[in-house]
Length: 372
Length: 206
Image (tube, rainbow over all chains, first blue to last red; front, top):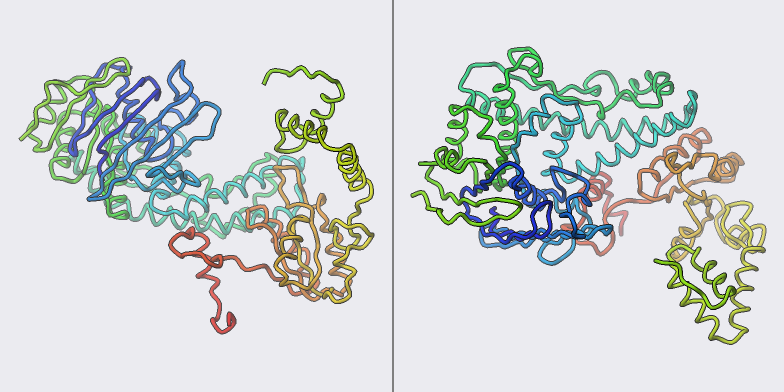
């Protein structure tokens, strides 16, 4: 699947853009704050129905205007898909495929698989567990439609249970907790099994990518930590009722799941070097890429936001070897320095197209030449 | 919308009252009021009498909490209906929907909502006690849950199940699955998955 054309109006700092891309590598080059990442974000938006920079849609409309439009034309073999997204301030977001509006946005997610690697990925390692759960959820829901629905139901039961705990002033009605615990156990078990299966399948691919990029022999691992791997979940909920009642919050469940990243048996967050953490995050995204390719039979679009800046030349080179091996399909890259990027991409044997970005305006670089 | 100036206080009052109704804004309210004003006086009087009479005289059935003109509703008081079969629904609208199927000859129990602590609705806000009392009487042979398939509907089902289970009454729930006339490829995964898990003997569908 490739993105052939994109048309953008009033999205973030982009006033208007009408571009045609190549099936190989498309590079957005410009200074910091010029709008490179906003272009990648517009592409991201068409896959996930939301921005990765700011999930509050009203703040993604360009200043002094009251709507934005992002429209993309995708080619997959012989078939053409037109995806339209329009948002007018204070109105419901419109998402259309081939001029037909989706009844619900979640129907669209997964149609255009996409993986983004960005500096923000380090949050996966450094920040709280909700980042890692979000990673699990966003990948699994791209190939498993039922997952999101189950997750929504679980969250809803959880919110209702917490409400009872808060309302009851330390003494919640046991008959109601019985009901909610039973439902949490049912939906929770389904989510636990899916997350566990996902990590098991991801792990070998992840290990392969990590050792490939780092070139070293470091032993890395991912452990899925969940209350549900222990004793019967419903019993755990029962046992923590008193504590829950005191704090007005449910302490046990898959909403507390975490992924533990280790390097040589030690926590990566504490022991890893900057380079190791970056490599770890990139390997995780590449594993996600392979995983989606395998499950959906289509290579996702790959967005690389400002990553060559952060990698030493050896690691960059290894990553680019993958690019040269036709491991990926279409790629979008953002970078600040044209000469540097051109040097990195030289001799890669793929079509490369450069776009200049300045003050939210983007145009095809007039010095484009195609690598042979 | 900026505040409108009305040529008459009476007109403004009527518009304000209409615009209290759900889904009715100021503009629609004005249109409705002007329409009533254009009709014969009798039409407006009949209209307001119907509303007043409805509000003052309507009753809720003592047995099932359905809306009724009498103390016991027309369904509960029909001798040909099977009082041993009780269908539990969320609201009066659901009674009407099931009645329209003409497939059901038992009686009802209207809960008046579903359990949702986030909306401030607990079991005590619903007519659960009177359902329990009906079952406890021993005259009920089967309770059918016909609540919404939302998470709150499920919660209410579980709650009722635990309340009624001790009385050894048969408890059933309406089937969930593929709607008649649906193409399988357009059915959501959750519903289709559930239909497979709860598949039934073909001979029972004949």
